[in-house]
Image (cartoon, rainbow, N blue to C red; front, top):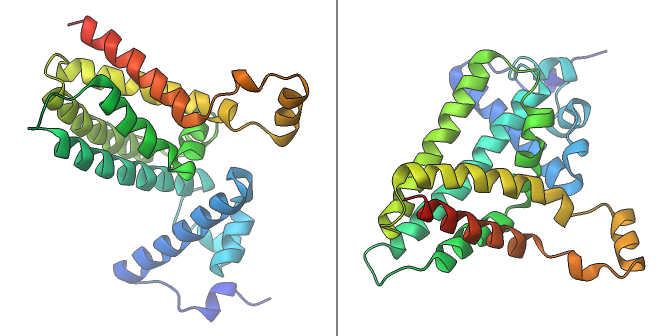
Length: 223
């Protein structure tokens, strides 16, 4: 049986390897967008990109490493947008906690791929990876959080930068946990509807907005 990669010149140069990694990440992202995390198995990714499953290991150490890179890319994109919008708020009139919470929640809720991936981090994605990969991921993500924390302390002077960092950690944990509850399986949604419990099922953006308001107030009160 011929190697699927023989239909595509084997990547040898750093540029070719980077291009192949980007193709793999793009394929995995598309599969998640279309059918959720379970749809992005190695076999499906390999088929989508035109490689054999074995050849994927030339570019990533595991499926989890692919998903980790996707998580970081989605997180970077969210952070860049939020940092820009928070920067635009700085220097103007006094900014309310509600406005900050709205910016964070709205932009996060608009990125379903990020919600899916971050929710899966501790239980699925942060497994079967090397220590080096884990360190790189955590350091990169924390650096991004600190940049947002600085912007938050700039526009909310009563919020110290360390407390802003603590807020972001707590809020991201809450937003991650809320994802599956606000996006239930169709059977669970039917059960909710059958029992007349729709009033308890708030939308994701509203839920994480309320988390943000409460946690910001708590961290500001800590001084």
